[in-house]
Image: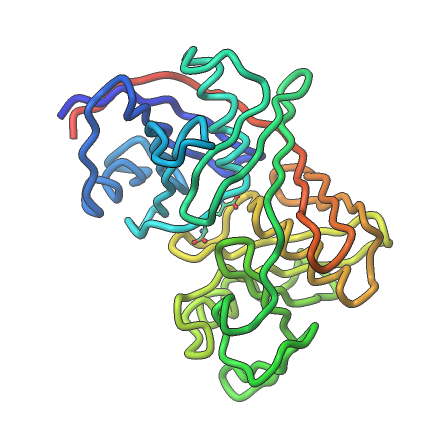
Length: 276
Ligand SMILES: N[C@@H](CCC[C@H](N)C(=O)O)C(=O)O
């Protein structure tokens, strides 16, 4: 199968974008792993597949696969790249889009220059729906990992996130704790793990160990989950700028029951073809 693709990124979180409307695409976990392989394929954190919608209220459907071949519910940086991709490939002429994902409908607005704003929906905080094993909902939970107890928040942005506050992201044990929490028994679907350093009520720094990938340069849903976790504890304002290793995202959330808005860039790198 010969596939046309576009390499894109959102703050260094990189994607292979596939248009499954204009070409026939048949993916398997093995093919996804080959596409994502940085030595043997194109190389990316996620493969994003753009399809015709099934829901009549949506303009497109897009599906998200981690580099390990697993299909996931949501991807914030990918959503911004999706919006730019469908405009640049002339699959739409619209600047306001509704897209169907496994996490529900997302609403996206293409702004000036490379900026895209996404209504990421209402965060899910009930432990059973994250999913996270806890008796009742709370802003934080004690989590025992390797004999030590850490304080984590559990938030779903359609996909599951654990958020830990740290003194200094530069020295946070992202590569030691990340994989242990990702596969912790209390997160039955595995989890993305965010390490958050608060600088002020308007600014924070974040590193994310992503489920199915490892540490990435940025995670859009991770930034949303971190802002929600910090806002629930009254540690940040409604609008907060989250600095990730690849750059900054602006996240707005005014509290429980309200949707989260994420604004940031989407960048096209090159177009290519691969035989899979
Ligand atoms: N990079 C993404 C999140 C991609 C999915 C995640 N690894 C998961 O397994 O849920 C983002 O920008 O949100």
